[in-house]
Amino acid sequence: MKDPQEVGSTQLVKNYNLKVSSATVRNEMVKLMDMGYLDKSHVSSGRLPTDLAFRLYLNEGVSGKVDNNLSLVKIRQGIFRVRFYPEQLIRQILELLVDNTSSASFIVLDDMSRSYGVSSLMNYDELRNIEALQRTLDLLEDENMLKNVFSRYDGDEVTVLIGAELGIKDLDEFALAFTKFDFWDNRSGHMGVIGSRRMDYRKVVPVLNTVRDSVRDSLKGWN
Image 1: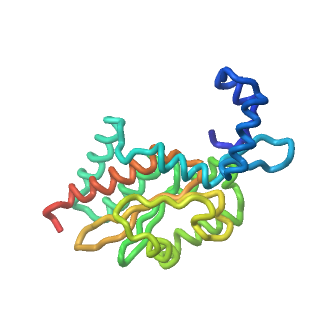
Image 2 (image 1 turned 90 degrees about the vertical axis):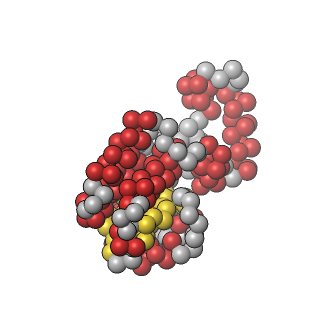
């Protein structure tokens, strides 16, 4: 779904053939609002998930591996095919991330930064905002700003920052996912994607893991 539609209790009962009344669902939604998992824009509207709800989904519903064998093979072959050519490898990483996540991609190395696919953000209604898009471009074009974000998270696994967790003005509707990786000539850096906080985390996290590991395996013995 490319538009962030608020969902009401009657719609949930109808669309998912729930064996309870809309009143029961509405009561449960009120409880979830009290817990901080749902929000609404006005009194009579439906509900939308909050950053906390997306975080819960990410922590409990996302695995670390690509489970589609065809996608796995395409990613590995795409990386392996250009492993001897650093510039082509950078381009391939960026394209694979965009194609498999429907988000904008970026690479930040010790000495450079690149981004790709910013136009894909226009597919999401909530991101069609001049201030937000300008801030996104500022972020992608300012490697120091990105490095400042990376410096707060030093783990080797994929890091995902959702909405307000980014701590950047005008990017409350966005999510940023990134991971460390090793490149040619003993250079190291981060690769990642930025997109809607409604991005498909079940794809994004496994794809980042797979691309990172494919780069590592392809360059093994050549650095």
